[in-house]
Length: 295
Image (cartoon, rainbow, N blue to C red; front, side, top):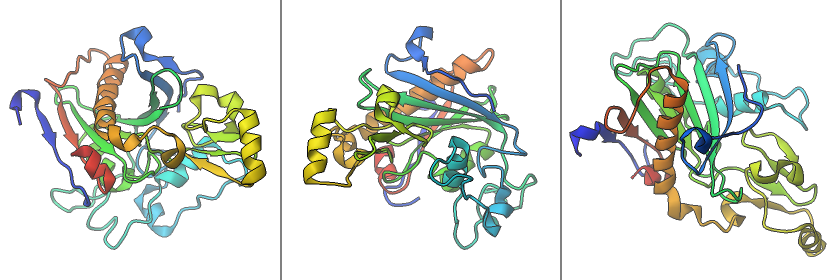
């Protein structure tokens, strides 16, 4: 690998706030034409954080309460916390995890909580049909003097938060920004009966209200949807199976775009930042088909 780019590729095929109210069109400020930044939230590292949803590793091990106040209409923050919590496995929080120094094996202070800012964004051709989802986590400790980005294509058709607890936390520990992509697979679905869809933050809304900001809306007008339900009632369309996008074919493009998004957002958000692939260390890692995307 050319050292000039300071890029390192680590991958395994089967291994290892403040919120904006309207989407930001990146191209209006010199960003990629395909990018729509949807939200920005900052977490203090105490009441809530980037890695443990505010529970801390000890709370995650004990079994945090991730129930919803209103189960039929959970909030975006409730959904985030439920997505970010991992059951872990033997040794989580003791020999590995966000509270463990991967170099020494020592338990770190802070119970694994990391303060910082999260950005959610879509990559799309303008139609709202692609809407490849990105999550960028920038720790408060991000170091402009030694900048690094860890890119994590999540495994399967999972939530953007799927790999925070088993891959992403390592980058945050090292003061790196971490950017995740669902590779165009995502867990967006369209309930054809109620005509409701999923937004990038996990909340559900009407398909017409969501418009092009829907994570996925089936390619059916209302008449076609009603006709389909007459023959096949109680149906849900799922993005990976029904988007007609063949997202598996564009895994590589989506991982590269996630890195371009991270560079753009860091430069746009941090004073005096001028990051490029020539002066920032870029690491790519994934498991399962996330590992395939990384390769």
